[in-house]
Image (tube, rainbow, N blue to C red; front, top):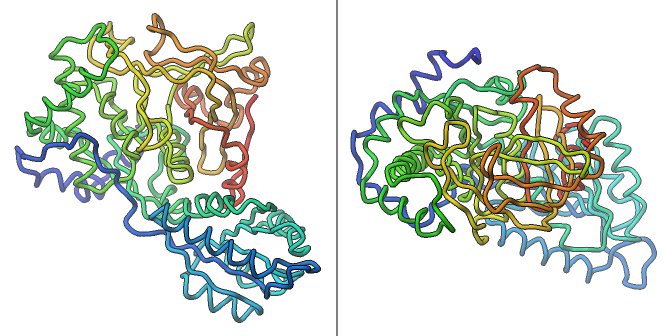
Length: 477
C-alpha cells in the first residue's frame, strides 16, 4: 500500500472531508452527456515573434504576408482550443523578450517564431535562463536560427523545433505547450491504494515534478454518494447503456442498474470536486456495490481520465494525451503472438469515444466481468479495424514508453482474457516482448503489464512533448 493512503492531511481535508458534508440524497440528474471538467483556468502561452519581417523577394527572412498568416492561424487556434490564452509580442532585444515574458508570467511556455536571420539567437537568452519550455517555429528560409534549437535542448534546456511551412503546425505546438500549465492546474482523485512506479505513487513527487494535486478519497465516504444517487438519473443511465448496446450477454437488469448507480455517483464526485482525473485502487472489490467500469468509460468519454487498479502511471499517461490531443485512452493488459507479429491489448473498461468528446461512439456489447465469473456489468467495446494507434505509458515521472501499431482484429464476442480486446500489428513483436518494461524497476505485474492505447500516430508529438517536459522517450518494439 502507498505510504500516503492513511495520512491525515489527505483523509481529513479535501475530498474526504467534503464528502462527509454531502447530503445523504441529492436530486442532481446526469444529463444525456456529461460536461467535461476543465482545469481551473486558461493556460497562458507566450508567443514571441523575433526580428522584423523582410521583403517578399527576400533574403533569409519571413515576409509581412507570412507574418499575418501566422497571426491569423494562431488566433484560430486560440479560439478553437478555448482553454489557452496567447500573450503575443515582438522582440528585437533581450530586454524586449524579458518584457513579453513578464507579461505572460513566470515559467510560461513559449512559442518563438523567427522572422529574420539570427534574430532569435540575439534575443533568446531570457527564455533559456528563465527555464521556459519553448517551441521554435521556423518557416523555410526564414533564417538560420533553427540550427540552434536542438543545440539548446542538448545543453539541458526544454526546447523543441518545428521547421515547417505548414501553419497548422502552430496549433500542434500550442497543444503541446499547454500540457505543462494544464497539469499544474489539475486535481486527481485517488481511491487508495495507489499502484505503479514509486514516483507516480507519491503525491509529493507528482506535485513537485508536474504541479498536479493528488487527493485521497475514502471509499466509505463515497458510499454516501452511491446510496444518495438520484433514482431518475440511475434509470436514465441504465437505459442509455441498454438501448445503445449491440447486445446484452451476461448482465442482468440488476447488474446494469448497480453499474449505472456507480456511474452517476462517480460523475457527481468529479463534478463536485472539479477533478481532472480519477484512479481507483480497489475496483476489483467493488462488485457487491457495482463495478465502476461503465463509469470509467463515461468519464473518459467526457475528457476525464480514469484509471483502473490504482495505476497512477496509466492515469498520468491518459492525462498527458488528453491535454495534448483531446483524446481518451484505452488502458489495458498486453499479451503477444510473435507468430503473427501482433500484440493484444485487453481490459474490462474502455472509452467509447476514442477521438474526443464530440466523436462518434464505438459499438459495444454489455458483458459480465471476465475475471469474476461473468458477474457485474462492463462494456466490450469494438474498436475500428485498420486504425493506426499509439501505445504508451508515462513511468517514473521521467520516461515515456511508446510504440505504434495498427488494429487488425477485434473479436465479435471475446471468449478469454478481459472483455474489450484489440489485436495490433506491431513493428517487431519478438523484440518488443524481449524488451518489455525494461525501463521499469519493479516486479509488480500490473505496473509492468499495463499500457494505454490512443487512436492515431502520436510518436512525433510524443518526442516533442518529452523535450518540452525534460523527459526521455523509450520506443518499444
